[in-house]
Image (cartoon, rainbow, N blue to C red):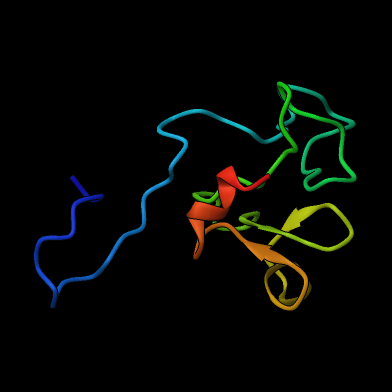
Amino acid sequence: PLCKHTNPSSVFYKCSPLKGEKRWWTLEDSEERAGMCGRSAPLYKGYYPVCDPDDPGYSCCSPDGYCGKSEKHCTGLGIDYEKNPDLLVDE
């Protein structure tokens, strides 16, 4: 699968340590909480919510506690879960 890195010259894909578990708010869960992330957001199944690392438009958590993909979301105090999926289990 994509998670195995056998050829050093190939593209490297970092796999989510959640192994299929979801820890982020979606519209199906709650319209009011969809896209909220970080320690200021309501807990999701007992965890601080993160952003979906596989969602191209919402894989980063801004310091304001919302998922998105702008520079504010992904750099500085923001967290980029697409580039750093290991951070998914730090929250």
